[in-house]
Amino acid sequence: MARQAFDLLNQRLTTSEPMHSIEVGAMETAEVFRNIHSMLTHTANISRLLWPGNKQKSARKQRAEALRLLLDLPADDHLLSDRTLRDDLEHFDERLDRWTTSSDAAPDYWQDCIGSWDVPHQQYGVKERNVMRHFDPSTQIFRFQGRPWNIPEMIDAVQALQHCVDAKVVQLISILYPQPDISPSPVIPE
Image 1: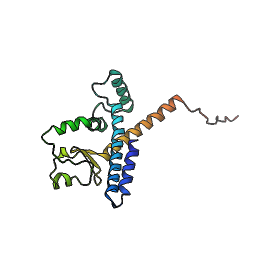
Image 2: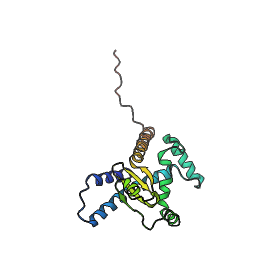
Image 3: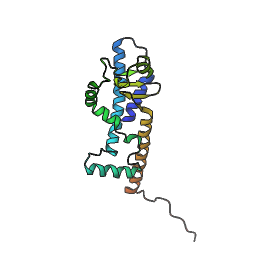
Image 4: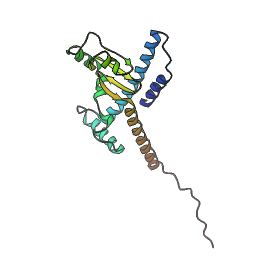
C-alpha cells in the first residue's frame, strides 16, 4: 500500500497541469498530501509491526524480534525503525498543542505547501517549526515542522523489505509444499 500511494503521488506530480482556479489547485494539493499521508501511514504500520515501542507488551516485542530475525533486519538501525515521523503524524494533535504554546508559534503558519523549501524558509523567513507540512517535488522530500523525510529512500526501504519478504515466502512454500521429483528414471542398458 505504501508503494501504491507513492506511485499515485508520482502520477499526480507528472500529470499536473497548470491551475485553472484556486479550487482546482486546492484539490490537487489535497490529493498530493493525501497520497503522502497514505504512504507514510502504511510505512508507519510496517514500522509498528517490526519495531514496536518500548512500552509495548512482551508478546508484541517477541513477535517483532522473531520477524526481524526471520527477515535478517537489525533491532534498531534501520530507516523504517525511526518512530519520529510516525509519532508526529499519529500524535498531530499533541504536536499542535506543543506548537501553539511555544514561543515559535506565529500567527501565521504554513500548511500543505508544495514547492522549494527555500520559499517558506529562506524567501519568507518562516521558522521551520511553523511550516506544518511541506513537500518539495524536485527532491521528493516531505517536511513536518521542518524535519525532512526523504520519500524515495523510504520507498526504497519498503521495496527492499518486500523483496526480502517475497523471498522468505517462496522459501517457506517450498518447505511446506515440496515439489515431487518428476525427472525421468534413467534407462539402464542391458
